[in-house]
Each structure stands twice: as C-alpha cells, then as structure tokens.
Length: 139
Image (cartoon, rainbow, N blue to C red; front, side, top):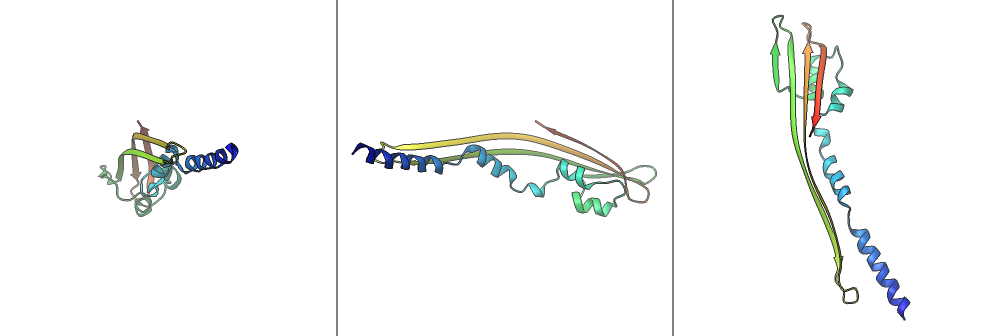
C-alpha cells in the first residue's frame, strides 16, 4: 500500500516544481522586450559607416539630441542616451493537500542597471559622415 501513495505524491511534487519559472528566465524575458526600439552600441558599430548621408544616419539612429556646426558649416550630431532598467520578477506555485501537508515554491529576482551611450558623428561639407566616435558605460 505504501508504494502506491508514494508514487502519486512524487509525481505531484514533480509537477509543482516543474511549474515554477526560474527567476533568471523572468529577467531574461523582461530585458529582451522592446530591445529593438533602443539606440544600442551594436547598432552603431554595425550600421554607421564613413560616407553615409545624414538621412541614412537618421534612418538608423533617429533624431540626434544635439546638432552643432563648426566655422566651415560642417555639422556634428550628438546622440546621448541614458537608461535605467529595473527588473523584478517572481513566481510562485504550490498545492495545499491534506496528504502533502501543503507544498509551495517561490523564486524571485530584482536588478537595477544604468547604462549610458554617447555617439558623436561628424559630417563633411558634402553632408556625409567623415568620422564618428562612441562611448558606452554600464554601472
């Protein structure tokens, strides 16, 4: 009689444990949302090239935060992005049953990260990219 009770209890416990989502999975899901909508270091490194027109740069990076020009009327575009990401995730699962005396499981995580990205793009008199620099930091 004892093995018959033990097997269903073990199966139920395995189902409960399998239903709980690990906190690391929650954090990964939250951080991957809307990542395509942000100016990123990878986008700058992959897409920006010398000789591109201002229209091409704007199509890739969007509007700059600041535009200046020098004495020769060559424009400099500055993109400055600062982001604070706060991720909190938890999950709970459990069953209260008389023969199991209540089984529950919880997991959770929280994380706050600040990142900054500054991109400086200098244009020639012809309106094409002559050089660009960037700096990225995370803290």
